[in-house]
Length: 109
Image (cartoon, rainbow, N blue to C red; front, top):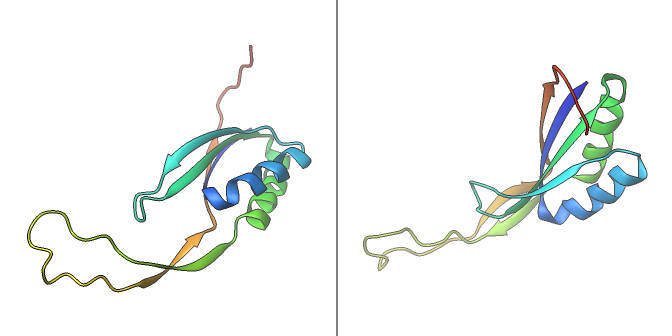
């Protein structure tokens, strides 16, 4: 058995959740925050049998594609902001970061 933790952008979370339900996967959904852009993420925690792991990864990949987005960085904290002129920057957002862990034991009460 595997424990799959998938961190996805909030914009992808509802689509992924629906696809997981349609495919018969049960998941726990947690709100989380990204470190780089400080934007909202959702972390899905999913227990899956070894033989269903690849099917689950296909569902995640199909529903969480990365895309480019233009952002304007926030001004630096502290110091003078007189010389700071924010320039829009194109960054890649979305997609999924997936961690797959081996489960030694599983109990459900």
